[in-house]
Length: 195
Length: 195
DNA sequence: TAACCTGCCAAACGCTTGTTAGGGAAGCAG
DNA sequence: CTGCTTCCCTAACAAGCGTTTGGCAGGTTA
Image (cartoon, rainbow over all chains, first blue to last red; front, side, top):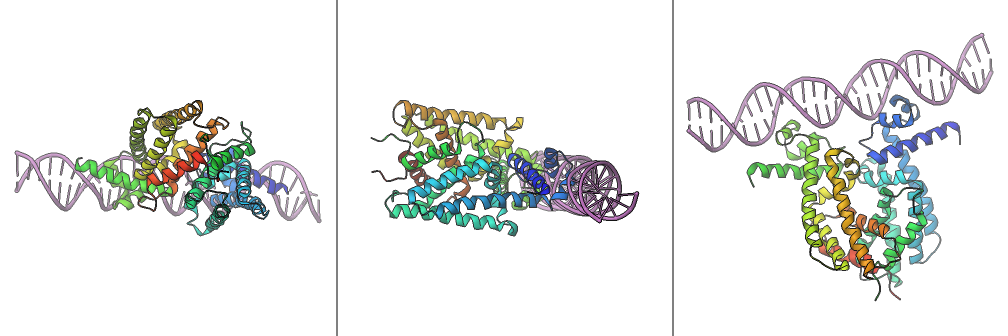
């Protein structure tokens, strides 16, 4: 990686942290510059605008996310194993891109209205196709219960996985894999003791 | 209700909708005024500041939420029935205060740092005590599995319930009670078919 | 040494923000 | 009719916003 590309990534990382902590709109370029140890105007040597920083943060994250997801989906696993792999992969992404995930969670809905961020909508459609398709496959294969509303289940599963970014801290008590294991155990088998 | 109090509530409702749709910081008082059919300055006849609108929206919501929760907690139900009642009550609150819940979700973490909004932290502590306590009671009574990390379970349950505010639309396909039923079925019994 | 590129600073720009001050129309009270 | 209150408008304010411009130190190239 060239030194300038390295510096760029460094600045984007600090920007992502500030965006995640304060929200995109509440974050001023002066705050980002403070956190990076420079003045506001100096950021414009590296980036076109505040918005393009956000853009680069989100698109980089989504790129890596889909690399992982596509690998899982191409592996030809059964429905239950696919769900397990997707959840585990998701928590790994949260571990690696905590700030980006938190930003995505908070801002995606508003941003996707803008043409520049329309790829967020595309990603969400693809996302829904992957998860909902797997759940449907599981119901057809009698691996998942058929008496549950599948769209509702999808929403619950999706949301819980990703909101974890709001409380997860890398290097904490639980590894991403351990969190995935616990979460899968709850969603797949329930928290109630079986009679 | 006096006519002026009525008008006040009306304005707060439209403000809450705009806050929920665009985020608090991205919402200008001019946008709120537009939605209310008046000019920006005119809002200050009714309210001290933009912040005090937010304050009143959130504290009103939390007041009603805790009225419902306290009733449930005082009913002396068993652990499983308490969880069921709390979840159902939560979805009812989402039905009645969708905008306020969405705002709370997005802004609570940042706001609770301000002294003015410290009651958000208090509420969160009380909230955790109620849910975590009930889960612990259930584990002790062998109603809930003891092999799951209870704090992790609490976070998952809490998050999934409240993020529902981001996609729920009143008057939609599912009633709050139906959503609660489906959600409880998933969390308590799991989505996997039992062998 | 001379020319050049890189990475930042200093200072300002036009614009939007939340908020305020004064006024005026409508309705009700005396 | 007169005076008062309610509710909004007009017009402006200072502060803060994202962004631009010009320059300057230090290392690299020739």
